[in-house]
Image (cartoon, rainbow, N blue to C red; front, side):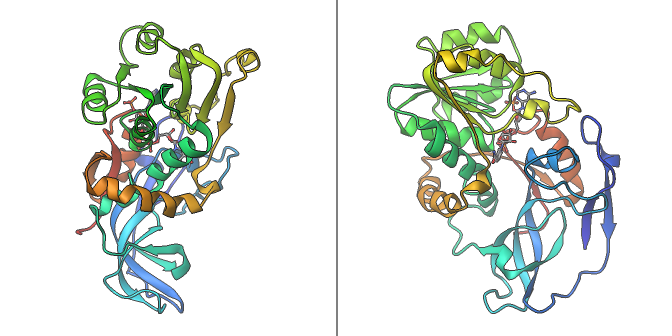
Length: 331
Ligand code: NDP
């Protein structure tokens, strides 16, 4: 099997030399274990955090350890009565072509109703993040203005569509004209601001004439500053991610939060795994919407496990358009 391990902790953007490819014979599963081959590997922004030993909510990947990652795979051999060869499973099995897992760490996809990659994106961890963030914190209501950053991405595209379903006016923020057109025309957002051109403050003021009631925060940095300035009294801010700073050695100083008191703003952080029950809940709710085409999604697909390091670099600079996936093996 082929695995990608962390060779050293990166400074700035992750580079090829930070990783190492290791080849070894495919292992045999022990008692209670399952051998799978990887079909799809998800590339997610959080992986940059795992490469660093800065204190975080999760342990870093050890030097010499296999990079973590969610995958869809096929069972090749099983020493657990719950799984049989041919089963399609989702699990966190890392950047490798084959892996051995405890049966409890795998979830079978019964009768897949969507393309398998969707179980890592719109129906998987990113989709659940959007659902959980909106349900538990954002709580958009009809007539409110909701702003979503990284709007064309795995999380943002779902967060905005959920706010539309709730009857809100939804404004996306995305990098580039192509992404903004897709966010408006395909996802159905009311407006989309390109954060890479022009004056962000003016564009946001134009797109949000009644201020902002809910902000789904995915990026931080200059985008956050512009949005915070337009929050309404009693606004809710879902602190989901701050990708603009993931490659920084030192986090930049934050905003002055005096307005949080004056406007009684609620700012709340979230990690999707805090509420594990949301995963199954979301999949049951969203699968029919994916099947009938009313919940839109798109993927950027790269081929071969060896493309994973560059795929991560691209996600951190906006080179992906929709959920970033690596096709590791045939479906
Ligand atoms: P995306 O598919 O949205 O890809 C990342 C996008 O971030 C890029 O395409 C780019 O979009 C945007 N971006 C990158 N750098 C910058 C920058 N400097 N300024 C503004 N935008 C930037 O990724 P995901 O949907 O997987 O993740 C989105 C966010 O959600 C991340 O912050 C991630 O860490 C977070 N997250 C949090 C979870 C949680 O449990 N709290 C779980 C899952 C994700 P563009 O070209 O439009 O700028």
